[in-house]
Image (cartoon, rainbow, N blue to C red; front, top):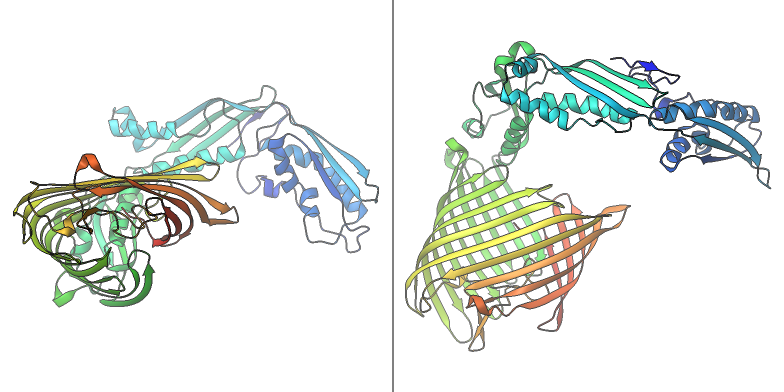
Length: 605
């Protein structure tokens, strides 16, 4: 690559001899017997250049060093070299006609003061740029291939040094590095610069850029080679590949495949790579390297939730039970208010990446003065893609609700479809984007307290995350649900709705908001809640610790038009840990005139 210059300015190309702010001038060694201990550097320059000069001038680096001092002769040498150093430094920011001078003085105490005065002059800007393509991508462009045209359009749209932009060394390096990286990720992993040239005319403050990028061949994927697999069936890996021999290579396709393998639950580590050898471009092998998880794993835990109190948990996972290509997961929870056992047998991915499942659960929940016993059996299949999770299943539910005045036994058989969509910057710690969850079901209910009959059930939840500038962040949530049946049909309590708790309306106890009948609380057929929150890091030194203010509202009801909303509001702390946010909220429930402390971990989708 070359950089040609006209006028009196010199802009060095990148390479071993290039001068950057870190190497603009070689630091001088300090004398062994300093004549004084310190001096002061004052930089008089435009605001956007002060930090650059104060940081990278030798005078600035020596002033902030741990040395005790330098000789007067050494200080004289540094002061004399400072104008040339300053001009070289500001050239990296596009100022090729700068003038710099040094003024010497002393304080009343005799401390030497070196003042650098910089007149930056006009800034050089890009007057012309031309990105030229060679190689197989050029052949595609010549043959009017739409994919080739789209690839070049993306490169040009994202080129940083467009017309009128200041010509900065950092942007010039970024333009070359990122443009080549984008083309390599778009199917041309052997792409490299053939030549790059920036002509800077210091007399007119104009920069002309010409860059020639050789794409090399377009790579296509070939066979999948698997390394490190011993315990588990290789079909679990191959069925997660959404490509076959001859599929055009993209970095995103390989990374998505790697992410799906990582979420499979069979491996501690996964890497997916291709061979960038140009001779294999027509069918480059895809190498999958895995480190397997143990065949069985058990964990114990002790925790606390404001919703259900303290708890002890035991989990066991078998990754090939009875020799099947499936995973068996058991979880036992023993707590103050909740005791439950959940078990599911899930197959490894089949063709089309679907996973078949059989699941069962039994739970006893004590909340709001009532005891609810639920047992479920589900049979279905799931599909997990980059942004969307789908779960389709048939469920048989048995539910028993006991309070001071009644005992309700009910059962239901239903067909269900659950759908979760996420488009956020981070699954664990989102700050920007949207998530949505939709549930739909239809079935038949049988009970001992009302008529039997068919029903439908829907539920939706939408959550948004927005950066608000100056390190402020906003979050809003709305959820709504409904059970649709004749008024005299008895619906199992587990399918009805209640509100209150950590991820609902804070300031109220878990599931304490619903429909009151004869002095007892029951679930409602309709639900509507919402929440808004604003948060900010407490200090730049502690970016993972945030404070927040929030307001929640909503309730459950038996009629959609008569949801008697109640409200809660408060303040909270957030620790953005590697496994998700730990939230501590202190909320006031307006309707009950009580304050509650809420503790929770993770994000509810």
